[in-house]
Image (cartoon, rainbow, N blue to C red):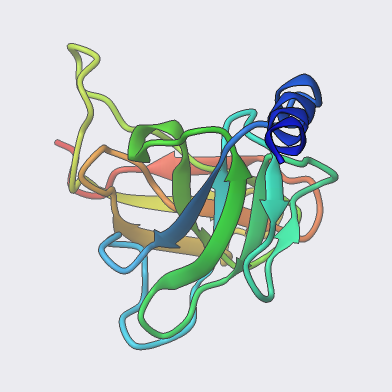
Length: 162
């Protein structure tokens, strides 16, 4: 009996087995999320491989550490299982404007390089000037991920700037 326990323990250690963390992301409090409706999202786990996707999620552009999907009406992504011990600061859940493969988001900062929270912005596709999205940045100064169907330049404007 003792030999079996030691063998199982050693086999686990030698196989390079690592721990995992269950993550249930939320975009419910992001100013860019629409309350009471389904919102698309992008999550970047910054190098931590996703072991199990949440229902309805898919890997983003062939990456094993980033995912896209649709949050439920409460703004939750569902549970992901990710390799390693993750804390909230180790990954970012970003609401997206549509669910296309091309896109960009911004981290707004003031003149001192500090985050610019709750700043009104408008993102405009340069492929179609009517394709625009207006919102306010979140508490960390982040905008939504503005996505387009094909590669396009995008422009960000600040309607309240003096």
